[in-house]
Image (tube, rainbow, N blue to C red; front, side, top):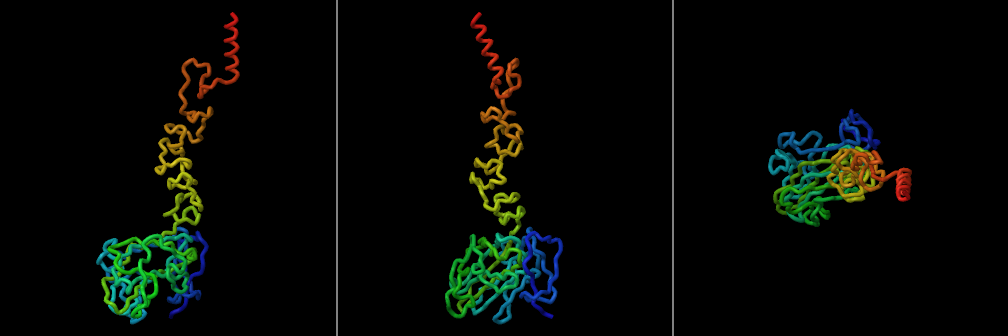
Length: 339
């Protein structure tokens, strides 16, 4: 029996130690009882297609051909980014539409990032591939229309209207990428706390095909240990909440966790392990977490030279005579002059 099932929005940080079953009618077509992973702030997704024997797809992945029910997406050992396998669709010399859909993927934060390796050699401007997304069972949309954005490796061509390509009049990947490139995508913020399905959609017309489209090494990163809505992979302070990503010295380390936020110190060197970076530690050779500097001379008390033997100041480390002792010394000097 087939029914309409899915998942509603889930608060961030929900425990993912167990899965849950649902049969609510929200618009994802599958069997009446479906097993969905629970959204968590630690939710990552990776797929390199290496755990199956070609041409099989990994569990939960589906290939469809809405035009003639002859899906072409499959795994292959030919031209992989991460050996041995990748997903591939050939560049057909006919009107064709080939879809490759991921399983439902939980997205924890509004700043989740997708990366994948992308290799295409297609009839330029006539045949192409696009990335689409469905959020919580909604209709598939182009990733850009849905609110995503490319950071790198985005669409490079436009499919013009000719010979009934199913994706004509759209921006797409087309032509020759000359090997694998990295495509990086900011996923739509609307996906936070929900499940998505990604679709790699290929379209061709009756013009002569070239080679095809390879996809490999897919990763979605949405870990956010400090819950500041900036994922760990790009957070300049992943263990300290800093949503503004402030970095006053421009060294790539956020002010909230920079051991010397006023001085550039990308390596965060701290020779004495006192939590103060060497470049601004007033005593970098000795542990002095409090940075005490009684005389304000820029040299920490623990680094001040010891007073010479018999020094009337004893151990007053900074070499400044106390006011009472200074007055006594001046009085004794005046008496000697009068005698």
